[in-house]
Image (tube, rainbow, N blue to C red; front, side, top):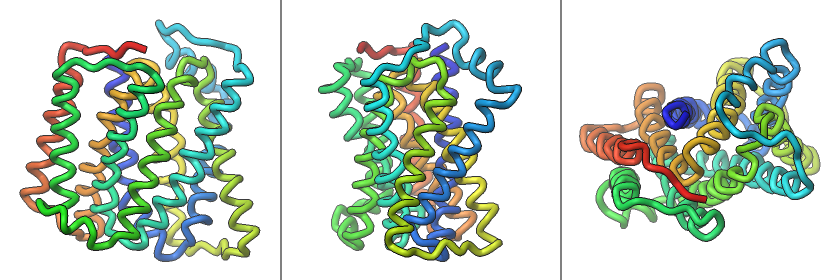
Length: 304
């Protein structure tokens, strides 16, 4: 099942990577809080519709095939679910969408790679995950490639837009927290229901904030296709894929692979938004791919 775990993580990176360009387009017309609320409420509705549809149970059987799962959900699990919902489905998207107003989609996608650092640190102390030397090398390659792209070879460029950079990095911290804590929920049988509840809690919390602030909910008609994609594919479907990947290969490995979403995000942004993505950035992307190969090779495992 590890093979499917890696494939799920990689597919999630592609889906999430494409959302960077679409989100950059939407934040020009929709307030970040409103955008986050709509994205996660729609994602929750989509996941609930899958859960209670005829394909819900067959899909769960497929996800749980040859895997140990838990049917019960304890009080601690609910607490973790709420924390991850607020962290990954409320605070992180708000910070990310706000940061997108200040930085390019390419830079935002690449800066999210710092999530790996947060995940590795938290996984070490919270989950006691152990890495082989080649796993550490793989993660360093991913971070090196992404770091060079984000700074254009000079860390002085990082301060070019301090507010935007800080917001994006802060969102990476909260998404990293979500990824690590989600390990405790990844063995639950009904990943669809957990993902649906998580999305809905995050979306409703942002909706309450938007209403209290009296924000405008008007959305241009031409933004609806982008909103639909980001909600259903980059959020709803990606939740299930990430939970499944965490279950099979560990949160630290998923967090190490997920930086590839920055490569895909930068690539998509260059085509859709005509943002700069030259040969050097492409080469750095290949370095990141090499890092992922090292993580995958010989089916290295994490201990919990």
